[in-house]
Image (cartoon, rainbow, N blue to C red; front, top):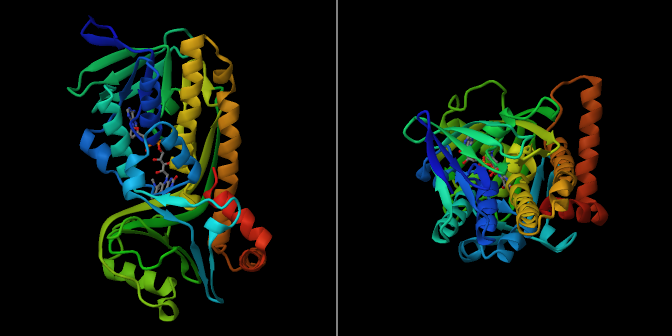
Length: 402
Ligand code: RFL
């Protein structure tokens, strides 16, 4: 690493500059650092924010295998728990799928994303990895040349500059990597026209399964996080602020939509986090632009209906680390050349399944003939999932697979 001052702008360098300390950036940082590659993570937020930001919770079996392979799975083995059942509730009754015994027989591990990120960060720092908190990347320049540059705002507010051989854009959907893409980059975007109110409740889970409820008032979802915290989702009117509903109204809607009159009450508790989530999907293609490489949400955002985002982030980080290690240790750039194509195969598979889930869980909005047709198809799809073992195997393979 070198540090020097040029006209009051501090210039620093690393072989790989990683933007963002989420699951993608920290997995990549750990793998590169363990391989002896000079890297640094630049993170806009402060350390406390990174360690406490609650988002995902369902980790796929392949994600656990990747983390195990690199000695990063101790925390999730100690505090996570396996999960392999989901329950669909409808006006025509309910059914359960033990997806852990279907398809490839794989289960999720429920482990809050903030705990995974904390583990990755602790491991990285304990191993001597470099990270700069409160350092915001503003733009990535010269990505087609041999020394790309990242312009940053340092923690003290002053401008800074990092030079690298490669920049890994792991800074999410609204980060600097995406803003710095050349005009030739393709951006595929889909707005699914559905909005959720995402909630974290200080209440124990009410089911020993992921709950998906399809009610005439709209979708409601239940997902365990820890023994005391449960995530709920409510289909929500687009454009309505997240704080518009009182806690009483939220619980009344959850009780009604989860058919608690038939299935027994939900454990209520204080709502400790709420966010409005517009179900959107997008993909940037390709994931490599010269020496700028995208991973995680910066590369693609699968709508959260299928719990794929953090899982893709970890997979892409491993593929990117392997490619960069080949490049630095053997001057072999073939894996880097293949990186985008390999990731896109997984990304589009996840996108297709998330799209399928969205269509399964949400009734069409209108009351016209077209909507009636779609609703009839949706009911038939649910019935097929209830009765067809082949359909259930397909569901399980895609639901937990990545
Ligand atoms: P992250 O986690 O957003 O981390 C990006 C990091 O980059 C920082 N950053 C910058 N740093 C420097 N300079 C800049 N200009 C920067 N701009 C941003 C940010 O502060 C942040 O620290 O992206 P990453 O690593 O790609 O990971 C993606 C996952 O976080 C995301 O896909 C998942 O949370 C999606 N998701 C789920 N995925 C699953 O696999 N399983 C789940 O169960 C699951 N549940 C969910 C979810 C997403 C949700 N939200 C966000 C709608 C549940 C919810 C509610």
